[in-house]
Image 1 (cartoon, helix red, strand yellow):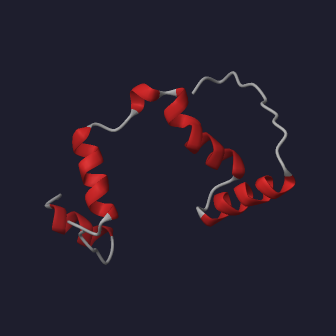
Image 2 (tube, one colour):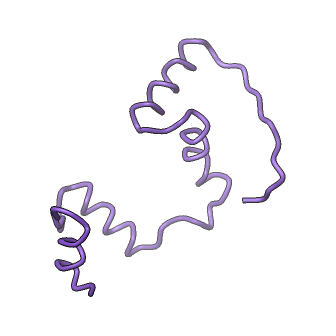
Length: 82
């Protein structure tokens, strides 16, 4: 991201603003982070996940091929990383 930034202001209904803040909070994000995450694919469509990544994401959403680890050391061992 460029060091140069610009401010963006929009007017939305208070109810919608509250919903957005709640959604951001539920995802452990600030409102700014949440909005940027949502608009990222529109701003940078070339950054879309490739076929392999989309497949893995779909599998994990369906609870398939998930490796459960106790901690980072256990994860490295299960993944064969020394």
